[in-house]
Length: 422
Image 1 (cartoon, rainbow, N blue to C red):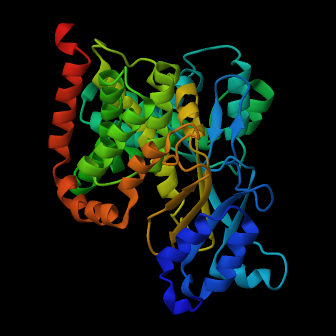
Image 2 (spheres, one colour; image 1 turned 60 degrees about the vertical axis):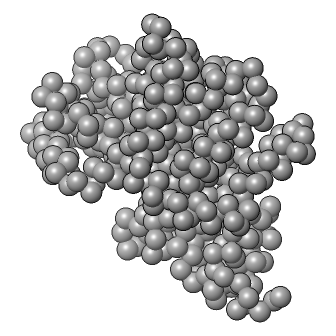
């Protein structure tokens, strides 16, 4: 049926996002654009616009920039660009930022603060050259999000404050001193750096008094954490079982206990159940590991940062920019490995909502070709309309019960990992 009235906008968005090439996507958008006036699409592309400095980049050693798209170009559809295309070349202003997490700051801080003297490793020279460019916007939010839990700790708060000062130096780096003297310092006076860091710290103190903010942060972190705890329990408990048995157990958990099916977490589970500890993100996770829960909580922050990149894509930082492209700077090879597991083909979102719809290049729920047909049918049972409706009905109730889910899963892993025998 070709009538526009026969299609819901949400269904059309999915149709466009799941197309295999840009011409097909554009044809569908052209056909249905009257119903998509506030929807925006970003496609990974071999041609098109360049999303600032957020394209993937590997420095010579451990450091890397990772955005959400693996290509150097993107192609966008929205109401304004669609009309501009009819009249030739389109131009759309963008914003972008590069985030640094706690791992990155731990790596960079000794050189920024002057604790380590002398020449930096070549890799760090490349990093500092990169962040010193005037168009590179440094975002400290991943570091802040990880450290809200530590801000009331008098010992930790001094370290947080020093790191916030280091962020301000990076955001206002003296390019002349860096290029000509190899010195990392800000062109701002020390008093201004200190004042800006104090203001940022004050904002963090203000935020921790907001119970809704903290509850939301805690919820999203726990949502990542429980997925990891369950993956590890399955990997240990079903060590002698088939890959498809493990995958089914994880999807059943997502369906029954979380009332959601997240593609990125499914892709991670897929790789972990195939590779085990060879997937270095899980390299420290094993039976009788005393710090297993702390490791998993830190890993959950890594997953949260990736999710936040997806979320940030929907943000509009100022009225003049039509798109925002976030990226993360990290020195954690294991995190890079996890990000690269799930390349994205397209992102769509409604301009009035901060709800990205992710379309991966490879559907993690469509398993490898060597999986038997009955296994595929077992996986597909979680994606019927009835199953989706069941998750929709149960989602709020499960969200309210997340703390009990955490406790149950930790108790399960405690037994499975034989932590009672350490």
